[in-house]
Image (cartoon, rainbow, N blue to C red; front, side, top):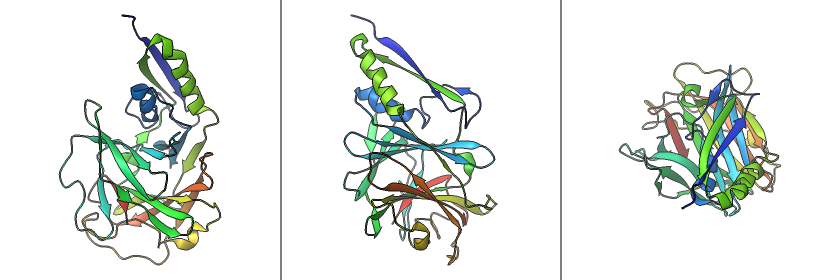
Length: 280
């Protein structure tokens, strides 16, 4: 039996991070899991970085050949709880042994699910959640709430990962890696100008899909937000302000007609979890 090739790939983020890392669990690397596990093309990968006084890995977006939009969150502890506005419980109700790998938005943009992995890298799936249409051509995908930026991975200058491949397929797989990085765009997300994290507040990010790219997102805040305002997501209820500073980041995914918006804000309240993924 012939021995498989060992392929080493180094990703360069010198404009964002510091130091070197070798971490296959990073959101910078996890999008390549489809290639490594199933030898399938993965589409172009676009990276998002959260910037304050330093840069953090916010996540990676990937539009697959099957026309699904994937988001790989850059969480240090990849066991967020889930909530929908108006529900009185968080999901899952007990701790899971699996961790989140990515969120998948279906081609019709009407539903999404989470792909989980256990310690043996075996996949499982959380129940399907519905998206919410805000106005014509604008859909709220999901929201992500964080206790602080420390919940995110710190960005390295370079990160390396390795995988094995049958010798006869090595060139094709390396070509897929190169194609996924070709013309990839690095996006910076930040809080609104003048905002900074303070105690008893949390960071919140709403992900929107805009098929026209002409929607005035700011005019729809706070109507569109998935940010929690009461228990069990928060330790105690908070008042909803009429005006909340937001920063709308236009994220380009070339294969999608339109745009992805990541709307950032600082919210009043104490989260009961390090990270929460929410919807309507």
